[in-house]
Image (cartoon, rainbow, N blue to C red; front, top):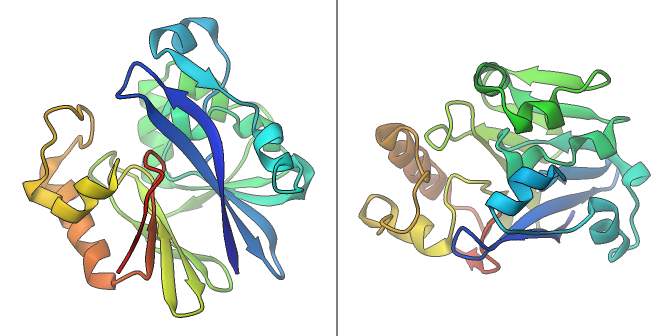
Length: 218
């Protein structure tokens, strides 16, 4: 299976970090999209100084279209991970039940982006297989229902870690990481640390980050 990185946005007000989504080219299930980027309300885009892109344009760079996406997995439901869910209203959205509950209670702009009338949620309660060789692993701490996506590839598993670690440096250093310029990395420090150590113990072959262009190999 091939993993393709999509460049979906840049958050200039937050350390100028990129926003990536990922496509898993699955031989039987079709294209599986992990996270959908930022949507388009003027106020939020201005507040975060978002340099935004349409998901369709990012997909086109890899000879794909939104119609090719058969499954969407949201690592979590913050605005920069579910903003263009409605582009894929034909597909089911795989999300932890606890994350959907959290995000609905918090409301806000993000809720408008993921909780539209046609949205079809596949609610998960813990680690789950999504397709052959593709599974989600719960990694709470950034949010209560955060999940990371593991894919079996030649030589071992690769993981799309979502916001369980913003950057490769944070992933590497775990509880010793300097988070002084990274507010919001965790909502619950204990759970966050436990989740990162859990991923480390799984020894993924490659770690892909939503907000860092570097890919770490074990």
